[in-house]
Structure formats: structure tokens, C-alpha cells
Amino acid sequence: MKTAEKNMPTKKKQKKDYKINPSLKGKYDDQPLFQDKVNRANHILKTIGIPKF
Amino acid sequence: MIDNRYLFESSPDLLTFEFDSIGPKGTITKVVRYTEINVHGYYNLGFGDKDPQSGFISDLTVTNNNDSQKVLATVARTLYLFTEHYPVVVLATGSTLARTRLYRIGIANNLADIEKDFVVLGLTSNEWEPFRKNVTYHSFAVRRKFLNL
Image (tube, rainbow over all chains, first blue to last red; front, top):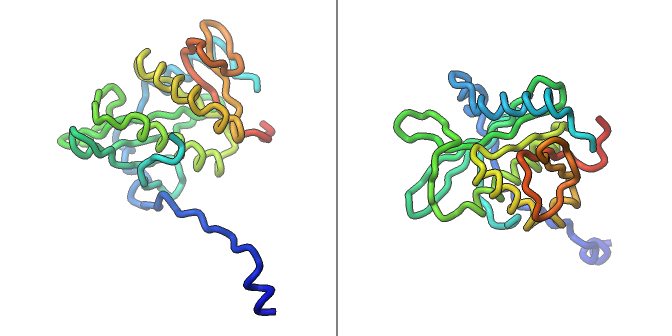
């Protein structure tokens, strides 16, 4: 049994490249981030239409 | 590009991300934010620099930290993470023509890898079309493959 376990392929664990930081939630609520781009995206969807995938 | 990126932090809801760009201009905090727009299921991808003095975020700052590929790869990684949890369409537009071109080049150079997981469209002057290399686009729309909206 032990030999069989040893021979089983081990699942390679992917290294986590980020961490959760609770302080980021709501951190920028005092400034509307990238509002120009949001407005532009809204304008595109309104004038060109939604992208058809 | 996909493997060479910065470590980053995420808000618990995976809508806001921060990482530090490190280069000859010093350490610059970058902020990535996914914002739902007026159409349900459609989000805007925005990212920019945090001013160390004021704390304000601007997507017009020119950093020149000699790491634009690494920064783009990190932003792309946040897109993977975000769309793993939100089955939505993401729109991305550069804040300037030069930056939109940089996005286009970044997508084109990694298209084979990107298309394993995403469908990418580009916006010409009047319509969305499947992304093609060497075509000028005004904006990009991406969604995960195998996603029913």
C-alpha cells in the first residue's frame, strides 16, 4: 500500500501569487476610480452595442 | 510575459487589486479595479498609479519604470482571477491611444495562451470583431470560454 502511494503522481501545488487583503475592500470608495473609462465603456455599449461572442 | 509578473493583493470580493511596480523610478503602487457598468454582466477593467503623496489614483501617469510587460502580465493575472469568480464580460480600453496600442500588442504577443481560456474581441471604428493581430482597435472585450451569458 505504502509503495503504491509512493508511486502515485503527486499533484503539484501551484504557488499562490496573491493574498487577500481585507483592507482593500472599500479602500477607494472616496474616489470614483477610472470613471472616464467606465463612462467610455457605457458609451461604447450604448452606441456600438454589446459584443457578440 | 505570463510567467513574469508581480505578487499582488486582492480585496476579498476580487474587485480591487494592488501591487508594487519596482524599477528605476522606485516603487510605484498600481491599482486594478473591476467596475460593473450600466449593462448587467459587463465590467470595466481600469488600472493606474497611486500618487504617493495624495493617494489618488490616475490612469494617465507615465511611470517609465521599465517594467510595462511585467505590469501588463500582472494585470492579466488579475483578469484570470476575477473571471474565475465572476462569469462576466470585461471591457478594457487604454487611457490613451498609446496605451490601447500597448494592450493590443500584449494581447497579440500572447494570443495563443490567452485564447486557451478567453474569447477576445476588438472594437473597430464601428463594430466588434474577433481579435486579429495587426489591426487597430479602440477597445477590447474578453470573456471566459465556455461561458453562457
